[in-house]
Image (tube, rainbow, N blue to C red; front, top):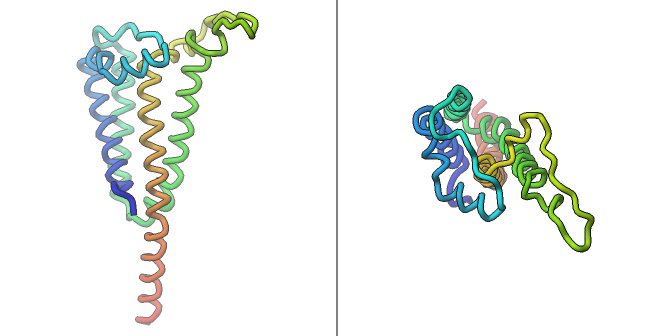
Length: 183
């Protein structure tokens, strides 16, 4: 049995999303100034983010999306536990883990601090050439930190759900046997 239940982890991630939505909407500089963002960004040599001094339309849109995500995840926890754990979150957790892992790798591997583009005596020197698309804005310490935390949270949720699965299936089996014997 897991130390912390998957429901508790999902509730925490949902409340984290709602809290981030508030800060993106009203005080975006607070997010950029967080120690975890600085430490993860510096350790991976990721560039700092600009444009978080004042609220903006893009940050307001991000806040709405995070709020919708957090609220819908909280509402989905009101589904029956058997269905929720086995089917809904059983597919959502690995999918969210995989997508956040892709964004972590993308923001690091194809960014300006990438090991692919660093100079070395063994490899030919390649330089990072920014493209004209908005994808270049995905190579920063804020996105890296957020996706890293998301990746770890969803991996933890996925593992916890896998541990809880056997007890849920056993409980469903016993309930089915009780119903079969009562008829």
